[in-house]
Each structure stands twice: as C-alpha cells, then as structure tokens.
Image (cartoon, rainbow, N blue to C red; front, side):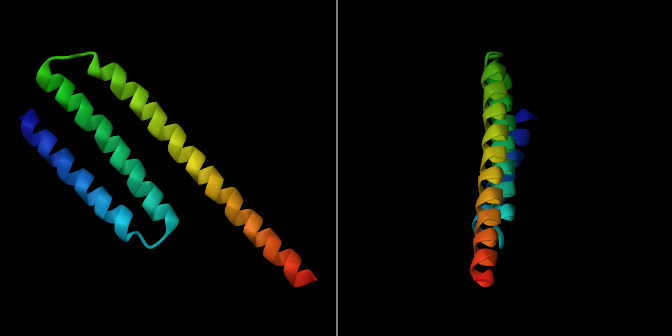
Amino acid sequence: MFTAAAIAVLVAMALALVRAYAGPTLYDRILAVNVFGTKTVLLIAIVGFLTGRPEFLDIVMVYALMNFITVIGILRFFEYSVSQASANSETIKEQ
C-alpha cells in the first residue's frame, strides 16, 4: 500500500517538473518548484516509514522549513526586482 503511495508521489513530482518547465509565467514555475519540494517531503516521510526509521521525520521537518523559506525568499526577490524595474521605467518616461 505504501509502495503505491510512493509511486503516486513520484508521478506527482514528475508532473510538477513538467509544469515547472512549461509554466508560462515565473510564478507558475515557482509554484511548481514549491509543489515539487512538498512532494519530496512526502516521499522522504514514506520512505522513512517503509524502512522503519522514524528519524527521517526530523529530516522531513527541516526540509519542509527550508522549502518554505526558500520559496518566500525567491518570491520576495522577484517582487522587488519587478517593482524596481517598473519604477525605473516610470522615471525614464518622465524625463
């Protein structure tokens, strides 16, 4: 049963990678990478359960936190770079 869950998570990860590659906008790609990270957390938890190693759950929690902070950081970076680019273009139009 858990092997089927692991295979389903791997299929979902593959679909997220396809979406990251084909996403029309930057935010679609970032969301797909976030989904991929979340599915990785699930896969590590399933593998830890299958192998009988509960310490994998600690690794899962750290990875989930890193995934969340990284996605927020990337979104903030692109938010500020886009807003600065629009501010620069408005300054050029005024001159």
